[in-house]
Length: 614
Image (cartoon, rainbow, N blue to C red; front, side, top):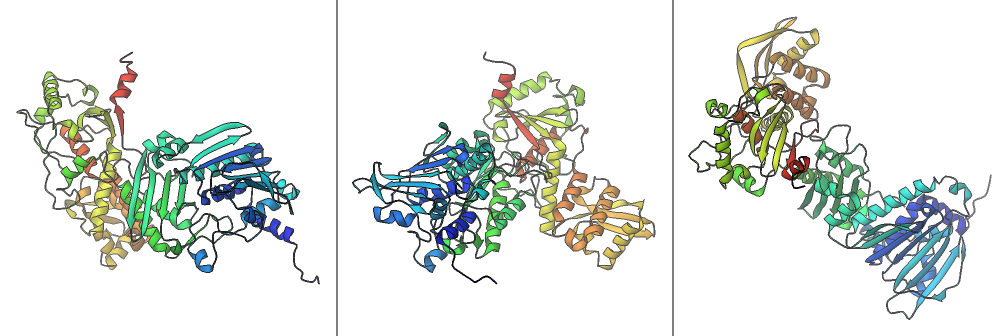
């Protein structure tokens, strides 16, 4: 049996390098983090052959003193922590005292540095384990580090590197992560002598736009929530701006890019109600908390963290992001204030009337009625005088409508006060066309109504207020043995699950069931199809799971049954009632499956289509 012996320092460093320096991008990360820890406000990165041949990082940071240069290339030497207490509340990006030594052990490295009060710079170089003497050099204040011929002395590791383009792609992604995290630092990236990115110091939103594109910023919601010493801020893309991969997901904990299962799960849960199951959200989010509440010393790569109280972190992130995504469609501050007096989810909520325009003519906004049939209880004669309700002739505008439209547009309180505007007509019984201050609004009426009903059902179930509507004539249907057994089990269990959902279903015979009551909000749905879907979910998942973890899926199915169907001709009052409902409903910009419910076509876009002004 072989005897135990100490490994040579060079081999120890190379083993450590295998954990820290997986590829050129890993080395670049460590160098950039050192520059940031040094207080740099300007960092330049130059790469050759994807960073394999050389990477050069130049900064204007505090620099390294002459007497510390040798220690900078020595393992377990650092200026960032001194004790266990420091380690348990580390605030710097680097702290292990291992990265630079590991990089130097598998490359040809040159380090030049000058502190502000030094007469000149100093230089030290290494080739694997061979370290040169320190000598004077010419350099302005700051540090320059060159890492050349990565893995030159470990050819087995070098063989695992990919093509130049692939390795550069990883380096560019690492540069992106750093750039997003520090908009207060100017950054430049060169590859093979070509400048690819120049980022000036600026506000976070500007940096996000420069790095991820203006479309990301335009389609994102600002997030900034604080509670109990925690803060979550940044930008989260609207569900309609989704991706087929996770390539635009950036999470930082105290400025450090991380991949954490707790955070990822909380974000997925916040988006689950508004995003299609095979799509991914885009976001740049920063979590700030007391460093002592998070352990960053989990892995040498430092992209994993461990929270002292992960459940609290999960709840905070979920509720913060869920709140941001729950803003009703197109809501402005003025509209929010207008609707603050009316809770559309309350079963006792009165029919809310919107302000009169002051015109002697009837207003374009009928009395708002939050009903499944979108009934506005207004005389249809007025609206029929404006539109031919036949969906194929809905664009025929009468002189009476034209005059009324002109009067309302001239009035300060007319359509411009409401984000979704007012209805003009339908297209093929599928889309509602409306006009708001921006231009044209196109609404998928089924998708929009489905979200509205879904949110109402969720709220009612949460408040144990799903009202039951007895049917004048119970609806019986032939049922299979599993459906009958599900109802019998529900009856034996005091009918709790079905009653909470607003159903009364009875067994008439071994092959027949009768629906005696359905939820009031779903009274116009097909009672048999609705009952079968509910019974199927209860049978497959059990009553308790249906009311807890499977609740949203079941309510989504129920809402789909309740939503107004395509090819149904709506009256103008019904269309306007739908628009008002959308303005009052959380997450109404997406249906339950994550698809958009409406689009805005601006006047600029319309003018461009028709080449106006050219």
